[in-house]
Length: 385
Length: 96
Image 1: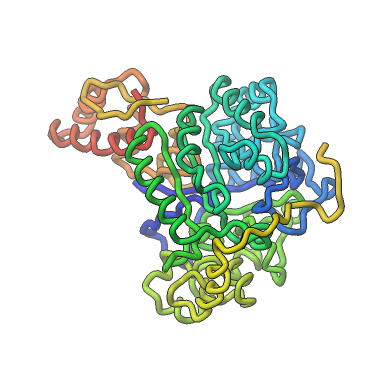
Image 2: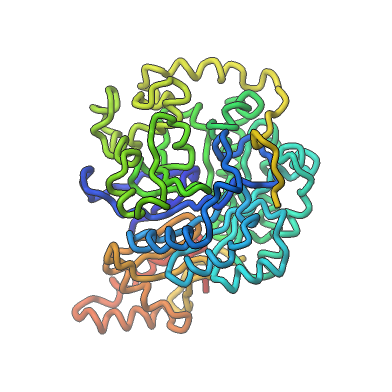
C-alpha cells in the first residue's frame, strides 16, 4: 500500500516509485484557488505578492470544465482554497460538480464568512472535509496575526462544522510569535473534536519571505516544538492525527517539494492559470498556460512550465549525481530562485548546496528582533464582497 | 472522535466519513481518499477493503477471503487482514 500526501506543505514522506522518471505520472490532486479575495491579511499568506483582482477571476463554467478535465486525467482530490473560497457564491455548485463526479473535496477556509446554513448546503453538495485556519489560541495574538477580528467566529465555525457532520482539520501555521502556544493549540484541536491537526511552520515564500525575521523561530524553539508534537502524537494516537512541517532552513536535506515538479499536483489560480505549485508564479521567467485556452491534459503533458523542472534532466551538480535526486527532486525551485536568483540551483536548504551560506543571514537574525508585520494586501484596495 | 483501536477478530470495521474507498479507472487500482492523502491499494488490500461494509466482522471477512482464495490458510489470512487494518485504525481511517 502506498500512502501519498496530496498537498504540499504537509510533511512529505518519501516513497518508492515504480515508474521511471521519463514516464508521465497521473496527478493526484488539484488545488483550486477560487479567489484571492480574503477578509484576513495574514503576513505569511501563500498567495503571490501580486494578487489577482475579482474582475480577472474565471467564471463558474470555466471552473466546472477544469474540474471535469481534472477527473478525466485521473486526479482524485480537489482542494478548494483561496484567498477565502467562501467569498465565491458558486462554491456549493463547484463542490457538487466535483463531488458528484467522484472527486474527493476539501475546503480550506478561514471560517469567518461561513454560516450554519452555508455549511449545510456544502454538506449536501458532498463536501468531504473542511480545514479551518487558527492563527493562535490567544485571541488577541490570533487577531493581530490575521489582521482581522474573527478569532471567536473561527472557533464557532469549527463547532458548526462538527455539528453539521463534516470531518475537520485545524490548520495552525506556527512561527516564533505563537510557538509558545503550541500545546494549547493541540488541546484546542482535541476540544473541538477535530480529526486532524496540521502544525505547519511558516514556509518562506512571497508574503512570508517579506516577514521572515518576524516569523523564523530559533533552533531552540523549533526543537521544543518538535518535542511537543512527538509527545502529543503518542498521547493522542488514534484520536488526533498531527501532521507536522518544519521550517526547512534548519534541515539538512531539502523537502521533496510537491513530491517533485509536475509529478503529482497542479494548481489553478483565480485567473485560470495552471501552475505546478501555488508559488510557481514567483518564477517570473516561466509562461503559464490558462485553462481558458488549453485542456488540462495538454497543459499537464506539454506545457513549458510543467516540463521545465520535471524529472531530473534539468538538474545541476550536486543534484545530478546525488542518490537522493529521485527522493527530494532537487528540493524547491521557487525557494532556490528566491534565495539565489538561479531557479536551476540546488535548494539552499540542502547541506550540499553551494549556496548554503545564503541561509546564514536570516538564521542569525532569528529571535533577535521583532519587526512589524507587512500585511498581505491588494496593491489597489478592493472590497471583499 | 474515535478511541484508539486494538482491532480484534469480532470487531466490525468500517471507514469513517472522511475516508472513501473507490476504484480508480486511471490507475486501475482500488484507492482510499482521505484528507490530504491517498492510499493506493495493492490487489490483496483492495480485496480486503471491498469487504468492509460496516456489517461484516473481521473474522467474517477472513472467512470470505479464505473461501475465495482456495488454499489460503485461515491464520495467515487473518494475520494479513489485521496487519492491513490495524495501522489504518491507528491513523483513524478504520473505525468500529
